[in-house]
Each structure stands twice: as structure tokens, then as C-alpha cells.
Image 1 (cartoon, protein in one colour):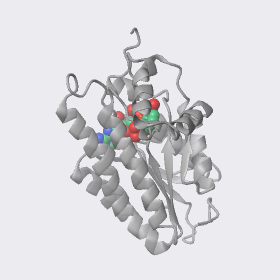
Image 2 (image 1 turned 45 degrees about the vertical axis):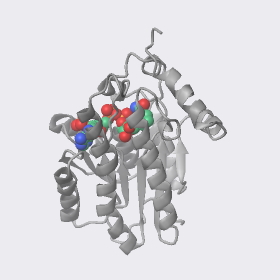
Image 3 (image 1 turned 180 degrees about the horizontal axis):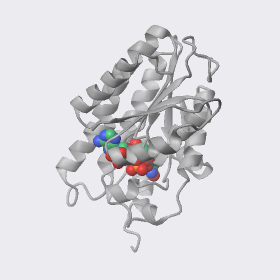
Length: 276
Ligand SMILES: NC(=O)c1ccc[n+]([C@@H]2O[C@H](COP(=O)([O-])OP(=O)(O)OC[C@H]3O[C@@H](n4cnc5c(N)ncnc54)[C@H](OP(=O)(O)O)[C@@H]3O)[C@@H](O)[C@H]2O)c1
């Protein structure tokens, strides 16, 4: 599939990007990239106050009159929350050029002895069910128009089974597999799918997951703006997958030649307590 990525919208309107988890972290920086490249935005997250601050920071960025930003506060771990976002997108009456399906959380800790089942089921509902649900609602209209791009935020954890974040890493493996399969199904259409695989990135992710006291939590992490720039470049070139950062590219390259037992042991070193 090849297309002029920017400002080639048959409707004559500015292109529109929808970013879930767009209020902070990687999602906020993705939204900033789109705004600076001439897109209007819909950003979705739960916290209304933080969403409002993000919208203020993003409004007016970019060429001409600048980006117009709408916010949707919804809990994307619930069926109703995803339907609410899908309904608000439909009510806009304008095509979605890019969906960045990015909202996600982690849960850190030993599966058998430490983590809470409800936290893990909630994470699966957000990272897996919510993503599948939202993409289902958006992709059909993209296929009918024969145009659009879907960016799915997986992780390098998607290729590295993750001791002490076992369920999280599995959700990211799901997203990676799903993204590549969907891309293949859509290869005869004008709709592209790109899987984003960040490594450890400086956001609230580690604190929220209870992973801040691990080796990965304490190490120097990537700048979310760098991750977003790599993602935007990959979308512009319709890449199947983008691993942000050189160190992460090396790790993913090495992982391809390692048995799963070795990948799990490697990842497990990163999620050990920092002081061990
Ligand atoms: N940081 C890393 O090291 C790293 C590495 C690889 C992949 N990732 C992935 O990158 C994505 C973004 O994470 P981040 O690092 O940017 O973390 P973050 O700073 O914690 O941002 C998470 C975003 O998701 C939203 N969100 C969380 N739960 C939600 C829910 N139930 N419904 C709607 N929105 C929800 C948050 O909004 P509220 O605060 O309002 O809930 C926030 O906007 C995630 O999918 C994560 O798995 C992160």
C-alpha cells in the first residue's frame, strides 16, 4: 500500500488522528506528532482534568490555523467505554485517517505469589479486549473508504516472555500477532497497520504497574517523544513494525535467534528488584 500520508484527504478537511491514551506519556507525544504534521485530534483517556490539560497543550500546534483537539473521557477497559468512544467518533461525521490504539497499562509482580487477579483481568480487558473492540469499530469504515492507518502500541515485551510481568507481556504478544495478521488481511486495501514496539520509556507506566523498584524501572529510559517520532516515520513509510531506539532494535534482533526459555530469562533479569 502506498499513499501520500499527509493532507491527502478527499473530504478537503484536515486529516484526523484518534489517539487512545493521548493524555500523557507515549500517547501524548504521538498526538503532538500528529498535530505538528497538520492533523486534527481526538484524544481519549479516563482522567478528565489531565485530558483537558493535554488538549490545551496540543490545540493550535502545527501549520495553518493549527490542530483542533477534541477529548473523550472513557474507560476503554469496559465494553460501554469503547462503545462510547466509537459513538462519539461516528457522531463527528468525518473520516478517521489514523487510529493510534495506544492506551494500556502493566501489572508487575510474581504471578503465583504477588499479583492480584482482578488487576490482571482488568489489564487484559484494556490491553486486549478494548483494543480489538475499538479497532473492529474503526477498521470497517476505513476499508469501505479504502484508506486509513492503524498504529497498535505493543512493546518489545511482545517478543520477550516477561517474568514478573507475565500477563502484561502476553497482552503485548497478542497485540503484535493481531497487528501483523490484520495487516496481512488488509494488504489488498488502502488500509495500513503498523505495530509499535517501544522499549522501557520514561512515562508513568512503571509507577502505575508497580515496577518502579525493578532494574528496568530504575534504568535510563527512552524519551517518549523519540518513540513517537519513530512511530510517525514508520506510519509515513507504511512499515509493518517499528522498534523505537537502537538498543531495543538490537534486543529484538537477538531475541529472534533465542529460544523462548532464554528470552524469558533475559527479560526476567530486567524485572528483578533493583537491589538484588
Ligand atoms: N513506558 C514504557 O516503558 C512502555 C514500553 C512499551 C510499551 N508501552 C505501552 O505504551 C502505551 C502507553 O503507555 P505509557 O508508557 O505512555 O503510559 P502512561 O504514561 O501511563 O499513559 C497511559 C495512557 O493510557 C490511558 N489509560 C489507562 N487506562 C485507561 C483506561 N482504562 N481507559 C482509557 N485510557 C486509559 C491513560 O489515561 P488515564 O491516566 O486517564 O487512565 C494514559 O493516557 C501502553 O500501551 C503501554 O503498554 C509502554
